[in-house]
Image (cartoon, rainbow, N blue to C red; front, side, top):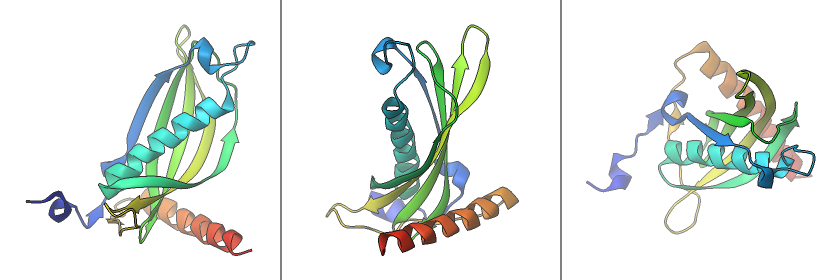
Length: 162
């Protein structure tokens, strides 16, 4: 059976969820020990890409990274936990929500440091957009996140037309 025939037509958000854990080193930070925002963005994009590819079972590329909020600093030595879930799908596009938490491993204290919404498009072998599985919305949280994601996607599309 080819992999194209085994792709599900519907998936729950939990089937594509991903968590990545990354240790922050001096090469990730400025001389004062604050991790660069770009380093955090790179990790946000990476974990969101995992979710998009798990959901679409295909190559997926970043289309937009928006609503990025840096809430607290991340320091050298912290462990960065990145949790990502898919909120919304439309044809070939997917909105992924990412929450980043920094843990001071000496104290065990975790702090939410960043949040973001990242949009990906699934691509076929020819490099053109392909349909993705729909979302099976099993919980109230899934339905709320889907509706919120749909509203954000509509705003993004409107802003592109300006």
